[in-house]
Length: 91
Image (tube, rainbow, N blue to C red; front, side):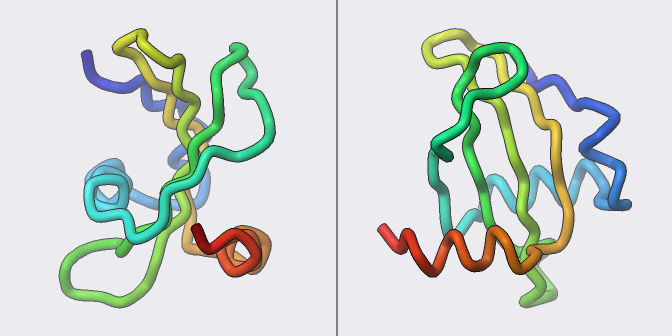
């Protein structure tokens, strides 16, 4: 099953194909200490926007564990908040 792409994932003008690329080529993946709107865990993916750039995107996905469903609800160029999170949580 493919993920559910919430309207909010396009709020900052990041195309769905760039979001997919960032997720598949993520250089950093972490489960955040918060719970998603539907009770799932929130997973942060940080990865390149596409193959021809070093710009990074932050993509937040609500994952429901063993259920083959996920909800992509946030995507934008990597901002200071999640850049700092990555620096403070390197593993």
